[in-house]
Image 1 (spheres, helix red, strand yellow):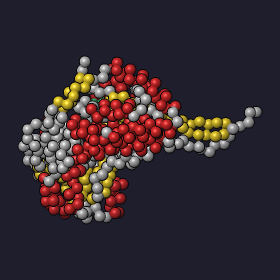
Image 2 (image 1 turned 30 degrees about the vertical axis):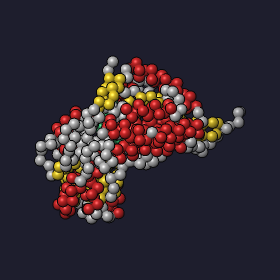
Image 3 (image 1 turned 45 degrees about the vertical axis):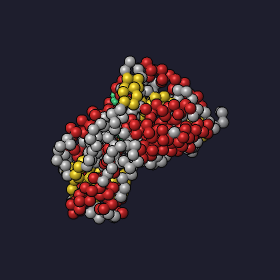
Image 4 (image 1 turned 120 degrees about the vertical axis):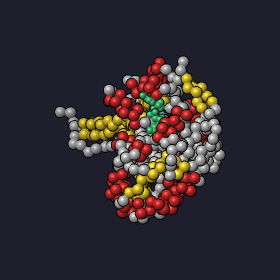
Amino acid sequence: MYEHHIVNPATEEHLATVPDATPRDVDAAVARAAAAQRAWAALAPGDRARQLRRFAAAVDAHLEELALLEVAEAGHPIGNARWEAGNVRDLLDYAAGGAERLNGAQIPVAGGLNVTFHEPLGVVAVIAPWNFPLPIAGWGLAPALAAGNAVLLKPAETTPLTALRLAELALAAGLPEGLFQVLPGAGPVVGGALVEHPGVAKVVFTGSTAVGKQIMASCAERVKRVTLELGGKSPNIVFADADVEAAAAAAPGSFLDNTGQDCCARSRILVQRTVYDRFMELLEPAVKAFAVGDPTDPATRMGPLISAAHRERVRSYVPESAPAAIRGEAPAGKGFWYPATVLEGAPDDRVATEEIFGPIAVVIPFEDEADAVRIADATDYGLSGSIWTRDIGRALRVSRAVSAGNLSVNSHSSVRYWTPFGGFKQSGLGRELGPDALTAFTDTKNVFISTEEPK
Ligand code: NAD
């Protein structure tokens, strides 16, 4: 039997040994989920909503426990982990209301009545990454269940513990047996079995662009529905007319939060040349003040990287000994620590085009608005980005011009469960969250009923 040893990335302590699901487990889970889904979809929407609200209440009652589990297995600072657990609760509540409002349309036609229905898809596979194990599980889970589907969740190899606990809470809250199951294990084996399974109607994948492409190709075989949330290399554009102090004060959080293991990380900082030196002077103390260390300490803002292997990957881009414009501290001893690092570079440097997924940013000067947009779009990704300016016209022009799914002006905020989230270009396909989250887990059916009198 294969298994994964789950390790606390801040201490390297062994937390648990989790057995992998086998391909036979996947078959059995799909059969159980399909049976549960038929009964679930037949419930009145209000009954589904009530059960999901109970599940949300169970998450709320165990918020601290879930947050501490996320701290332990993913190394997230406790303040962030509390937000993440709360995000799952809020999304379950929000999606529950959606179950009651999944309305079709009545479209005027001659000779009858034409109505549309949003039919659930059946069994949905949610394949989650390790960087935000709890919220990203919730982003697929909550709307899929609310729309009348069953969910099989495949957590990342390194972070299955919050997912397993979430499934226990769902059962304890009264969700039907089999409706939501967690299948831990290796990506290509368990994830691959789910993607290829004829009983799985849709795959929601969050992870690297490379694996996302493979999954999309595999889904094409069966015209299986697929949502992809993939990598990013997002710009943080600071214009000379901005509040440069505010932009510099906020910049560290935009690429250091979650130790840079954030698909929305603003890891390319584009600064208008006339304020470049001033910005760098302000950025240095802000980066150095970003508190790194014990994730259980509420004052901590940056924890370790997820694993030794991932730290090696980050180091392959920038070894700790390489010259850097700004370098923060990292704890010595146990744990997969890596210091905050700021480089100065050019738009086509490897560190400025590839997703490193660590606490590294590259600062690049630009001349004018057109130059900023050109550099911002000079990657295959298009997930998020920030624009710092006091000129509302410029803010709107640049927001419309940049090819990315989630932009913020004078802010780095990207995620609200009631607004849509997703990528342009190779950052993804489809949208999660927001008002249309439920319909992404349905197929629209059109029914025409003749009102002609029989001849
Ligand atoms: P990954 O692609 O290695 O793995 C993601 C998940 O897919 C894991 O559960 C893994 O086990 C599984 N998997 C791996 N190979 C598979 C296969 N052949 N078939 C089926 N499943 C397979 O990604 P990761 O390293 O866990 O996560 C980091 C990546 O996720 C980054 O690129 C990041 O940008 C991206 N991400 C994107 C978003 C977004 O919303 N756009 C959010 C978070 C993370």
